[in-house]
Image 1 (spheres, protein in one colour):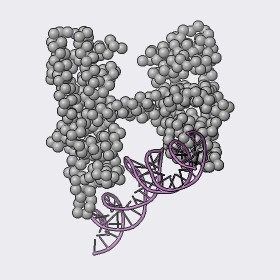
Image 2 (cartoon, helix red, strand yellow):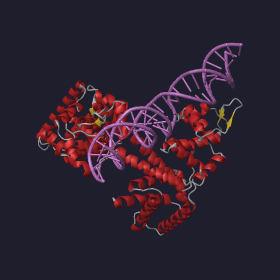
Image 3 (cartoon, rainbow over the protein chains, first blue to last red):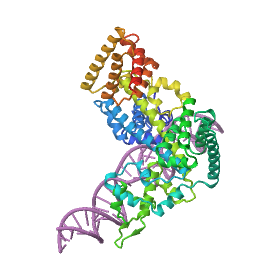
Image 4 (cartoon, rainbow over the protein chains, first blue to last red):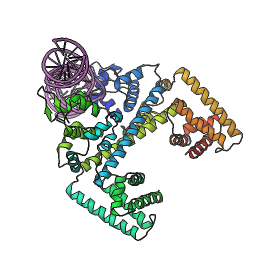
Length: 252
Length: 252
DNA sequence: GTTGACTCTCACGTAACGGCAGGCAGGAGC
DNA sequence: GCTCCTGCCTGCCGTTACGTGAGAGTCAAC
């Protein structure tokens, strides 16, 4: 029924130092001490620790946790609501960043130059109406910028060569199929859509069907990506778009 | 073409102190100084800052950012890949936490007691196989635990009364409809499903159709929630489940 | 020539601990 | 009774990425 710091630390998955800290700041003081000064935690202390860890995990600062737990009049539902909002915002932010990274990786793969606005847009710290015009000049198409961008989109030499080879091989095959008149939802073409996905997964990131269809949409929506594929063969962007969607549906 | 700290701070959305700090640690030193010692940033500095902020936003520590930016041999694609993985993990974690909070809020709304395992399961710091048996005892159904839980699920008095009233009113109406033999996908019943969603949105959190169908599934999957509705009227849990799904589909 | 806004360099403060040092405490084995 | 080992104690400094002044110099305007 009574536990030492070490025991508590072990079962709660925290360090002894953390418990010392919580004692120091008065967040969780053990209910007693031995004659030698050893901290003694009882069940009630453990329950309080449970609460503390719960709120901590939810992102509350320790001081606020103290207030929440010690104030019997506080409304826990309000805290949950607030925390739910915070989490939702953070979640949305993260999702945007994941999308932005996927976008950047695709662009990097195809050697497409991102505009500075695109690089910045993921963290919307800017007030566009105030700086838009200036920004154009400031971040504009200087040679230095282009050079830095070129360097930034450079791959490890060996990997790059292999990626390029695989990609071109894949490109030749899908162009051939398109030229042969195979419909975009035919098994052979869908198989190449699947290969496209696996190519991304192998070299860049785990690409789900959902993510791949997102990319396919982007290939049509963003003219630079469209141009990349149209440059390989006229109509390829739309063809690939359809094939990816067909493949995703058939695998679902 | 040359900017002072204040100007850079303003356009980049950071504080002057931050720029000072970046100068101190050598992450971003302005290309020049005026005779009076004022920092002078040029376009190249701004571009470097842009990169810094980009990586910072992606969660890299400043020291690592220095290494990334200063090492021309580094593979930026590898960093992007790594960061994509990190973000994906964080995203998943956040999603779990949001789900856990929604679960907790629903439970709190219905005065359902969460088991300690459920409270803890969102942060999996425990090795269950080692402590499961002990945990049972330690966190078990003591009166103190129940009492603390009761207090933790208490609402602000006025709000609580209104929520309860609205909820019971809604309950009476759906029970009446079910008793009248109205099918779960009839317009009237779906309207009540819609009201259920709005009730949650108004008092707890913005509840999308997707989230509501998730709740509906839980009402059937978790016997404590099932019991809550079956206690109001036999068959209500399944009836509401069907109505919510029907409503969600029709609104999509 | 003076005001007010801006800048400079120390330099300490913050959150939530990590990680030492130096020194007791307590049980096991001899 | 002595030693050994492990665990516990209290300081106290270190960390990250800055915040927040203090005190002093600088710049452009009125």
